[in-house]
Length: 446
Image (cartoon, rainbow, N blue to C red; front, side, top):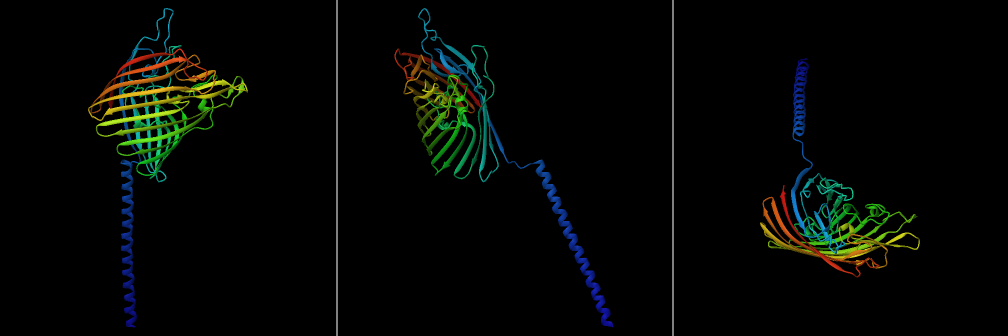
């Protein structure tokens, strides 16, 4: 029986040892669990105190002040800030030209604020956004009532986001019109930025860009007029031509870009519906027009040269000498034809970082509607008198010091006016007028 007693003793020892081992194991696992929970809690507290940033916002802008003097009355927007062309001769009873008188202004409404956002990855794409505004306002002075419009109030310039994959990107929101190439814009000091000769403005859009290689990119854009809408026909209201249209304006473009050169060509098509009712009748008549453009820029450390050319119909929304004409159709409603315009400009400047001289020259020509019209809805003309052509030459010098930029500029704009012929082009009784603008612009950037 001695062996039975030894066996019981051994089994008891093994049982006790197992209990101790399991107890130690449970204790170790419990300690590990407690430690893991403690670490998680510490990490949660740290994240609350120092949250991980999914978006980075970069604020930017500048304070801008412009002084300008014009030797003649001019067509303008925003209290002379953006001059367009000199007004036609207007003789009083004594034979004196009423428009042969000057004017000036001093404004800071060109001041700009903006924010760039780099966001998280979305559907495998890098995400970006931009919002930008100035104080130019959206409506003009009402001379009849003496109202100041919205000048001096905040105006939305851009508000859009971008999703960028490896080769393709999508841009949605309000941005530059697709024919506006920011890298190929006149470098003039004047706030007019070369308008009448170069396309200008912003619109709400959807744009798809595809990069074929490191140098070539193609884009397709669908957009609606926004900041500077098309002309207003009889019986219409501001921007009704775009709002009544069931389809947007379509634009396609291809661009080549390397270290020194940016060049491209593009085209667009629009089908706008000015009114839904004409002469008390339902109207489905549209303004159908196309446009084409090409641009080129060369730059190096010492020189920057730019060229831009555009030809098309109803380019009013680009702040150009264009629009459309109306005529009575067989069904008794007013039908429309686009006024065709050609515009060219070039700009040269030095690449000096401290003192930068530059010159600009622009020319635009009105070709009319190409057929008989009775009403004219365009910038720079009506059924009585119309612009035939406008040219502008200017010279400037920019003085740069850190965040500060001072630029005096002298600008001369000449216009030829004439009687409006049957298709909206210039006829007889021509008269050339000119206006000298002397200006200075000061900018402090941040």
